Length: 408
Image (cartoon, rainbow, N blue to C red; front, side, top):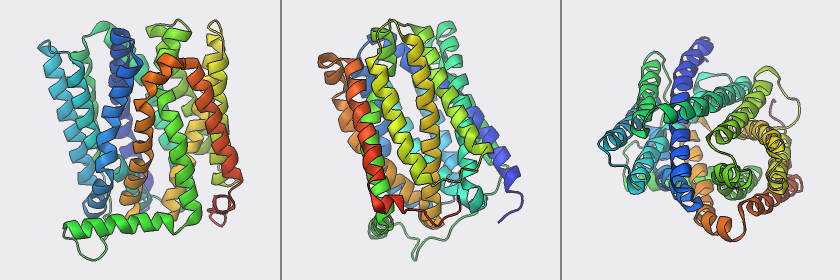
């Protein structure tokens, strides 16, 4: 293991930090723009589907190539492609062409770039750092994402209030350029692909089957994936409805939407900070199960609140952010520990596809649910289901024994 891994991560984190802040600002500006312009749950759901579906569909194929290609170059080209898509959308808005179909198409194209960038990033981490430090690194990654989640919405709300949506999009291009430059200063080792390197259809299909077998042969890992997928099926519609719950139920506006986004980021920051400075002695599986239950409680309780209890909604959102941060870091670390390095790209891509495709089905019904059941009732029902997932996880022996002998 390279003894300069800390220096590499510092450079990598700086680049990713700037990129994440700019992307967070742009994403939040688009959410505000869509929420205030349409006040439609269906529009927000379709925007989320456009941003997720392409990544889910091509994810398994992208993972095969990620494990074959230079992961550093993969991240650079993915960032460049996303920046190019954002620039095209900005130019269209500059000339006055502001349409929902254009936004959906561009969000979809950006999703294609993310299908390569995210798994390549996660698959590169175990190649740069000692295994004993993976959970701490995951915690620091959560800190970076959390600070971005705090600063990004604040910057996005300020920018959309001062600039047109087309000009706000330029922030994402600046962030992508900074991330690409930072990657040029670090070396990321490459793994050796299994057997043939020719990317024929047969080899690609075999690689995908190998990755799937890598997941299913470990019963505990398979249950971890299954419960996480079901959990995301419930979480995704709730995540989309957060701005509308703030506007319609709590009678908020841009400021209140920003507060909720920022406070979620503060919670993520606290959770990441805990893992960055404190090495837990309990099983990461137990952490994941408890976080499922806590996230479910925060969602359900938020739906039970009356319209004048916005302050309590803010507190619950902060707790949910802390729980999500601890969950994400623990989940990622388990995958990095359990899966061979030369298969991580495929496994992360497969997991993302398996988790997002069912979630999209939930998103398709988001508008119906919000209109006929009520947004607050949606929070209650899906929150209770997430609590049940956490309870079932504790009652699954194969999952509870996962990583039992790993160093925490």
